[in-house]
Image: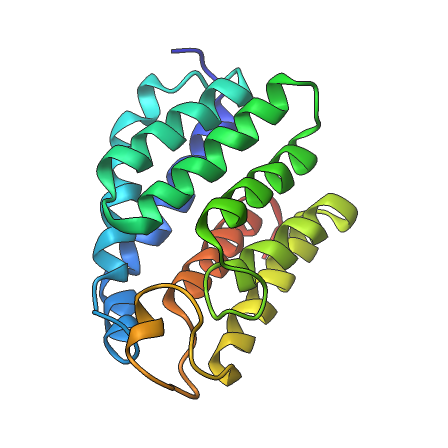
Length: 196
């Protein structure tokens, strides 16, 4: 594994934040889904955190690819597969010479192509897409704000069009737990770099 102390701290902070939200995400998901989003996300985050010492952190593409592999094998369900696609496609784009922000957008494009969710479907895409677009043009703080707004907007959306909650029925005033997790991940990143 190659070392990059800043990247290691960033990955650890995001994983620890997501692990700490396990119960809250499960509670949120129980209102509109099957109540396991927190457990699924925490399992993936624990798996990445357990491997943080062995990640090739000095090489962004290799790190993203390894995270994708880890999430794909540890999370289970469609979210693990979709996040694996996201990180793997982003890694491929980085290897092709794209800057990180563009590579992450390429990962999003591949994930939505295979997963079928789009903006407004009340999924993690509602936070991830605006966050990555803001990251590309305005930086991390703008990305975190966009993710938060996107996650909050899911509470006012009618019935989900993708994911497990699409089978449950119309739920208003309940944020999508996947979108909420994305917003919290971006907030954890900002907390690493922006003084309080």
